[in-house]
Length: 88
Image 1: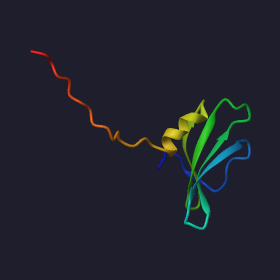
Image 2 (image 1 turned 180 degrees about the vertical axis):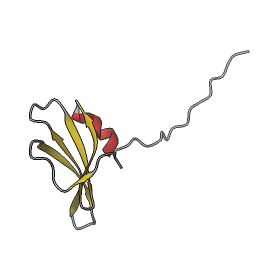
Image 3 (image 1 turned 30 degrees about the vertical axis):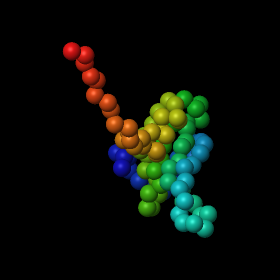
Image 4 (image 1 turned 135 degrees about the horizontal axis):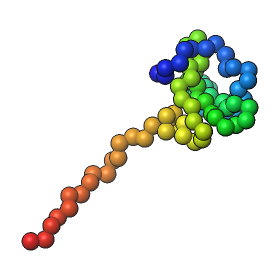
């Protein structure tokens, strides 16, 4: 995943803002996959992946919306590109 070490808990100086979760099964149960935190000044945000044994800091940004592309990567376009035809 990222380049940071796995930690067992989020640093106490960081503020937890939100968590991403995915369904586990059809029972309505969910599991947390990622957590967003920030520094106290809210000038820098951190994205943690939930991994076995704790959390791994995988990204940081000044805008937490940037993390959506990491958590929900865009899939390839399904529309085929049309070739341009030139007139003779």
